Length: 256
Length: 219
Image (cartoon, rainbow over all chains, first blue to last red; front, top):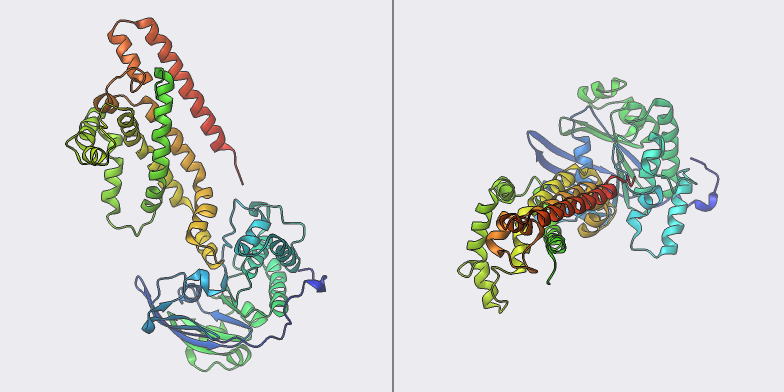
């Protein structure tokens, strides 16, 4: 992150908070997901061991899974209401996602990747927006490169820029640092935090690293075996877990 | 179109391959989706022309496009006239025999495209058609091209089914491979030899060009 160009700042950092409300029951094979949580925080972490249903919850928020029963609300917009037979398709949700392996389009340049969600804008506007995002993510001069020519950290920045380009109302991040070594991790955590502060876009990130939870999130949702164990402000939930199970979950450093 | 045998081979094969591309690509894409109902049955039906003896294929085609058959009847009712023993029949025979090669290769190509790319594209607000054209097809393109080359080669080499439904009418349905057979039958070995060499070299040339395009890595 090059914090240099203040001109690249977009919306004022202090934006009205956005509320995400999720009540969801779904099945995926043998796995049963039954989660309910509500957050108005800037950065929310979904934390739990592998197989807790974190990524699945994220995919439901993005609209990428067959809808189960339940309700998803993003501020004043209903994204899913199974009772009313409403399920907004992913392209109309205005919910961006950064996949664990980034899923950058390998046949396109960095510029084309970032601009992919901007096809409804004029050419000038598009170019300007791409430039701005590349600057914000510290990728100036990388526009012509292909994803395979980039390091893991650079790829993640491109994925971030691409997801933020169409100005989503919510950004989802699936294990954003899992594929990176710890030094790049630390750097990118700071970058992500400052990106959040500059854009004001609320983020929900899935992680099984307590370090990510501590350093990034304001709100914490503890998940285990498809259920929410607890949810609340990160600091108080970590300092004073409300149950034995929650305590066990947040006492270990890294989860397998 | 009236053409000498060699040119006719390529003209008919080209039409058959384009037809295969237009009809086969969407089919291959559908087959690549695991959720398609009756997928196995459909796969067998589509691949059948690859394993059937060409004469059996020709026989069934004759039943379908012949005057008593459904396609033949439809064509006559629509005022398009008879299909059997026309160039159209030759194109249909080459298409049915060659399209499975394209479909098979393209299906494998589509299956290789990481679904995460398509999902990412969806969350970026693009329509399904735009995603297919900008992500799925370009990423599967090399497999499609390989299938195209195979299908074209098969169409140029088509003999058995073509003879049965289109006959051997000079200039109209007597393609290179049929002309060679006729020449050998008539004892005109010299001519058969020249045509055989010409057919072998031009087909190899076209295949070479197609694989060259396919090999160029685009990313």
